[in-house]
Image (cartoon, rainbow, N blue to C red; front, side):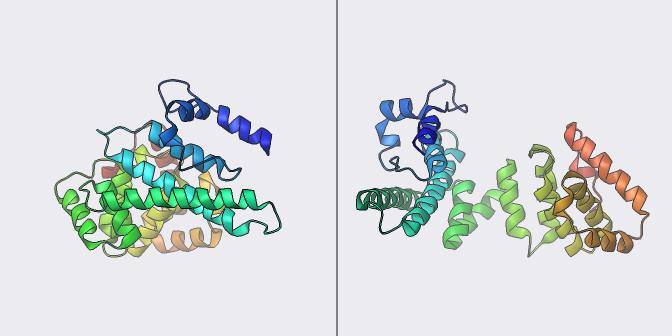
Length: 262
């Protein structure tokens, strides 16, 4: 365990301009690390919090959102660590984890309170999904109406929001995000397959399910593919060819959402 912790501390923050280690960041900016002390648990989550704080950019509306997510992940992780602590183990270690949890939870709550009225669509959607803050949702929808959902993340938020009430709109957003996702985007393929099924477009539902099956066969039930193929009214061989072509287009950066029949 000790060796792994030392290795983690020495890992460079590859997302940053300089190749600093976590220990160097903590030495230079102790305020980034004091509420997420090293306790032997949640090393990856702790590193991510420090990384996001180090990379923070006041001009990037996504920065605070990323810090919120990383801190939230750390709090959830350390909370589990506190719960599974063996009561017969050293009380000092148990106390350190509890103190770390309290400190991180306090920091998380402070950021949540400071950002609850923020106009950023990232933060607005966060507060809607976490606290069902209706005003936050209205701000997010206002940003949508003003054409401010200009990133794959924000379009993904919109797709999630509309998935039940307006599957066609959700589909449009999700299709727009595809070229920006790491490929093959199996989860997105499956989401699109379901959305098209909800719209009774079994041809497209099959193609996206087939794309997922080609990329990761274990993720798709063969019976589902067969059912979609039969109900599509098209030759399976032609649909399979389209699925492969679409995967190639995505891999080569030539995919266009406008080419999909809605």
